[in-house]
Length: 102
Image (cartoon, rainbow, N blue to C red):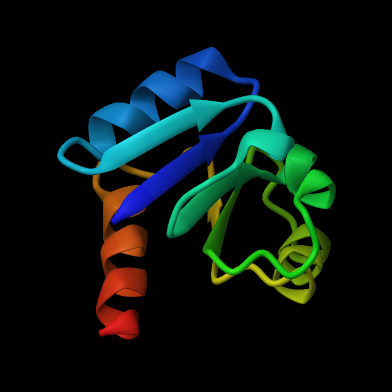
């Protein structure tokens, strides 16, 4: 399972990579370079994703609001997580998507 992390927040990217150890991970700040089975994207970059992305999308945000969650799901997100999630939460979201595809 290939995972693409898309964010311009270096500190968060390091945290996410530690949480997702063991997966093949591509890290990018450029949405035109996305590739993978699961895309984890900052809510600030969500509108830059190509339309009809075949990958499952997890949106992470520093602004955890109902409006933003609704917008993320309308844009096709499979999951929506605040960036302040606990260690293991991102990994759990990825695993639940993988299990759902089996």
